[in-house]
Image (cartoon, rainbow over all chains, first blue to last red; front, side, top):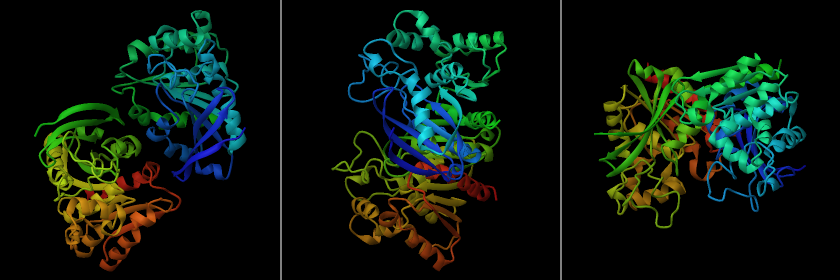
Length: 280
Length: 280
C-alpha cells in the first residue's frame, strides 16, 4: 500500500500533512490528513481518528477545530479521512442533495446499487485506514475514535462494534439513532435497502443495547443546535446508556450550536479524555 | 450608524458574530466579524483589530486561527474586517488577479480611478470601524492592531501612523517594505499612481525611519514561507528598527510557512503580548 504526500505544514512544532492513495475498500483514490505531534519524531504515538460530518472533507476539522495545540502538548496523532468515496465513476445523489452520496458516506458498507461499488466507508475506517497509518507513520496501535454529527454516528457505531480496536469514543452533536431520524432513514434506505433489520448494525442506540464491552464514551451536544430535535435526539442515547449502566457521559452545553465554533470550544476536553484512555 | 447582525455562534463561553453595515468611507455595504469574550457581558473589554491577507474575508481568521480560546481567557475582543470594499459597482482587477481589487485593498486610500470611489480601507480601519465598534459593543478605547501578510502591512502602517490610537502592533509574515516588492509595487501603482513619493506613507520601513512614537511591535515570520525572499523581506524591517533603536521583536520561526497553521501556532503569544500593553 503506497501513499503520496500532497501537502505539509508545520503546526505547533509538529506537522499537518495530506496524503492521497488508492483505496481497495472504496475502489477509488482517497485523500486523508494526519497531524503528527512533535513527540512523533522520537517515539510512537497513539492515534485519534476523527470522522467529519455531512459535506466535509479531511480539511474541515484540521483547519477549524483548533485541535493541534493540545494534540501537540499531549503527544497524540490525529487522522482525518474524507467523508465518502470521491472521483470519476463514484455515484452521487441524483438530485444533488447534501445528505446522500458525495460527502455523505455515513460510515457504512452499502449493499444497494449504485452505491455498493464504492460506498464502503465502514471497512475503510475500521480496517484499511489504520493499517495504512500504522504502516507509514510513527504510531502505535492505541487508537481512539471521535467525530461530529454524521461523524459522531460513525465514531459511536464503529467504536461500539469494534471495542477491541479502540480505547475510547467521543462525539460532538452525533446522530445517535439514525433509524429514527430523517437523515438516517434516507441514507439507510438508499445504501442498505428497505429491510430495516439491516439498519440496526449502524445505529448507536441499537448497538449500545446489545454490547457487552464498556468502552468509555464522551458526548457533547449544544442546546441551540438547529438539528437537535429532528435529527440528533440525544435523549435516546441517554436512555439506553442509563438502562445498560453504560459508562457514557453526555453533556448538554447551553447556547452552543452545530458549528465548528462549538467543537473548538470543547475539543481540549475530548483530547484529554482520549489521552487518558490511550495511555492507561 | 446602524449595523445588522447576520450570524451568531457561541464560542468559548463568548460570542462570534457577523454584522453588515453601510460604510461611509468605502461607499458600499461591508461585513465584519467580532468575537466578544465572556467578560464582555459584565465589563468593557479592550479590542484587537485583525487585518487579514490577500483573498481573505472576515471569516478566515475567525475560523482558522484558534484565537478565541485565549481571547476568552484574557478578556479581549477581536474585530476582523473584510480585506476590501465589495459589491455591485466596486472595481476589480481587469484580469481577475488575486493581488489587486477585491480581497486586496492593501489598507490604503486610493487616489486613482477606478479605485478611488471605494478603496479607502485606511480610513475605514483607522476611523469608521472603531467608531462603529465603540458605539455598538461593550468595549473600551484600548486598541491593538495585528494582521497577516497584506494585513501585517496594514497593521504596521496603520499602527505606526496612529500611535495615539493603539497600544501595540503585531504581525505574522508581513509585507514590510511594499515599495520594494512586486505585490506592493503593483498595488501602489494602481491605487496611488506612479509618483513614488505618494507610496512612502504606506510603507512600514519608511514610516519606522521617521516615527517618534515607540509603540511596541511583535513580528513572527516562518523560514519556510514561500513568499519570504521575493515579497516579505523581513531583514529590511530589522535593519531600520535596529538603526532607530525601535522596540521591535522579530522572530524567525524555523520550518513554518505562510498558512493559518503558522498563525494558529503562535497566536497565543500575540494575544498575550497585546493584552499586556492593552492593560498596562
